[in-house]
Length: 86
Image 1 (cartoon, helix red, strand yellow):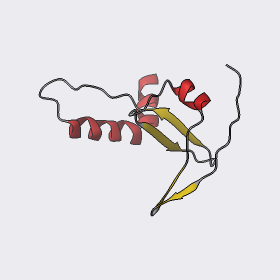
Image 2 (cartoon, helix red, strand yellow; image 1 turned 90 degrees about the vertical axis):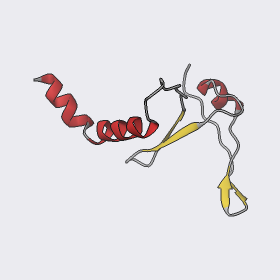
Image 3 (cartoon, one colour; image 1 turned 45 degrees about the vertical axis):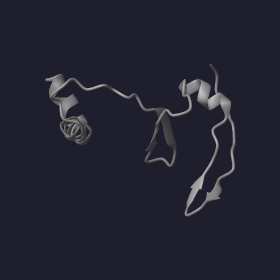
Image 4 (cartoon, one colour; image 1 turned 120 degrees about the vertical axis):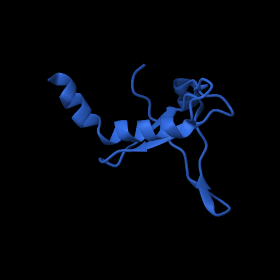
């Protein structure tokens, strides 16, 4: 798929702001009503949107542990990759 540009207006919803998703974006994300999306704010001012993958954790695995490990991995990602090269 080549590059596709779509636009939407931002509107006020109570104390928040909102927008709708163009069908092209939903199809590209393979997103359906009820799915969650993640927004990643980039240093260059762009925003990446991706469908959040809901994972069923095995019994005995605490979601907080996964959250902590993910945070550590994200924080030290560059260092971990450099160590892996050695």
